[in-house]
Image (cartoon, rainbow, N blue to C red; front, side):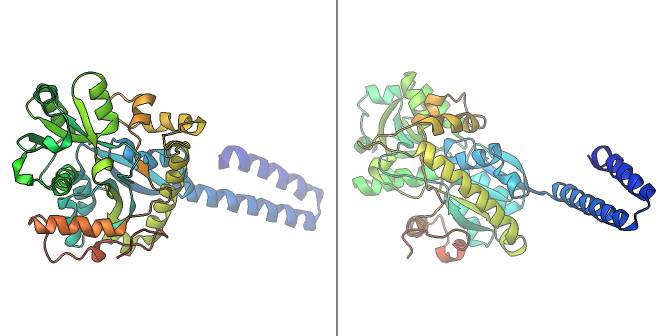
Amino acid sequence: MKSTCFAPGGKKTLSRRALGGSLARFTLGAAVAAGVFSAGALSSSAVQAAEKITIAALTFVSSSPLFIAQEKGYYADEGLEVEFKFFRAAQPVAVAIASGDADFGVTAFTGGFYNLAAKGALKVIGAQSREEPGYDFSAYLASNQAFDAGFTSVEKFPGRSFGMTQTGSSFHYMIGQLADKRGFDLGEINLKPLQSVPAMIGALKSGQIDSMIIPAHIAKGLDKAGAAKIIGWVHQETPYQLGGLFTSAKNIDERREIVEKFVRAYQRAAGDYNEGMNALDGSGNRQFGAKADELIPMINKYVGPKPTAAKTKAGAPFIDPKGRLDVGDIYKQVAWYQERGMVAKSLNPADIIDLSFIEGHFNLP
C-alpha cells in the first residue's frame, strides 16, 4: 500500500509545490507528507508486530468465547494473531500449556491439571463454563442395554461401569461428587479410562460401558438418535466450577501485557455469549433470539462433531459474562483430589490462581 498509494501521490504533490517556488508551502507540504509517511509506517509496523499466540482447547460449546473472539476480530483488535490447537481430552490441554506448546488454555479442571499447576507450570486466570442450575451442560448417559436392564436414574450407578477419559479427569470428579451426594462408595462403580471422548461415545453406543457423562450437545444428539438415554444432569445434582482459563506462570512473569490483551478479548466474547446464549425467560427457560442466531455459526465453525444450531442451543453451558471464577469451588476440587491421592497434599490452591486479571471473582476463601 505504501508504494501504490502514498509514494506516487506524495512525489507528485512535492514536485508541484517545489516548482511553485514557495519555500513555506514546500516545507508545509513536506511536513504533512512526512507525517503521512510516518503514520503509514507505524501502521504497517503494528500489523507486522502482531503478537502470535497459541490457544489449546476442546471443540466443545464451552469453548465458545474463544471462537467468538476470533470470528469477531477481538484478538486482532488487541494486536494478537491466534492459532488454535484442538485436543480430545482435557488433560492434554494442560500439558500443552505446561510444555510451552500453547500459550493459553480453556478446558475442564482435572487432577493432572492441578498436579502440573503444583509444579509452578500453570496459573488459573479466569473461568470457562460452570455447572449452573437451570443450564443443561453435562448429562449422565446410560447405554440402551443398561437402561433396558433398569439403569434409569442416577441413584442406580452402583454396580455399573462408567467410561471416562482419564483417571483424575473432570468426568472422574463429577461421578465422584455424585457418589458423595448420593451416599454410595465410588468403588462400587467400575471406572474405565478410555483416553478420549470419541472412544467413550463408541463404547457407550456399543454397550461396552454402561454409562458416561458428556456435554449436552453430544448427549442430546445420542438420546434423540436412540443411541443412549439421558438419565440426569450434573447441574441438578452437583453444580460446580467445571473449567477455567489458564496460562503459564512464565507468560504472566514475562508477557503480562499479552495476557492482559488476551483476557480483554476473551471477556468481550464472553459478554457476547452471555447476551445470546445465557438468557432465561420469566419461567426460567432458555431464551434464544437474534443474538444467538448471530453467534451460533461462529461457534459451530469450530464445534464437533457435525454441529447444528439446535444441538448448540441444546448444549450451551452457562459461561460467566466476565470470566469470573467460583474460587472456593476450586479449593473444594483440590481437596477432593488430595484426599484420594491424585494431587499432592502440599498444593495450596492460592498458589495456582492469579485473580489480578479479572475483577469480581466469587466465593473467595
